Length: 96
Image (cartoon, rainbow, N blue to C red; front, side, top):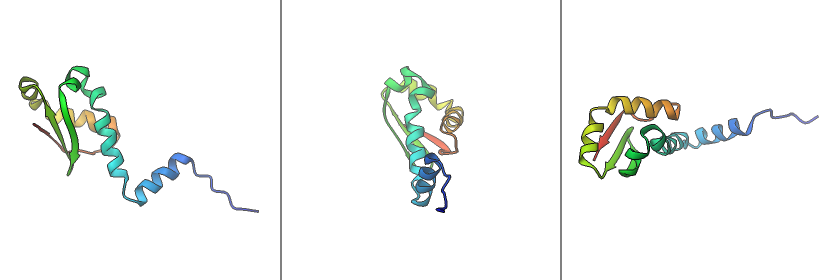
């Protein structure tokens, strides 16, 4: 009798991502993808660039007043984005 492998596809993919050290990058992409859901359409429409590097989320905005407003809520935004993505992906937000 052949031994069975009772691993789900999800577990197999997650294991492969972890083995090839890609899980962090996938989580970063998931976090960037959740920007509009967490921040709303208005903020998302004024966001010109968004990327993660060294546990920092870099956000380029087309509105100086929005940048100033978000500056005061950086810690809350970090918490909300990390909660949405399911793990601590970022420690800080840099608004540009």
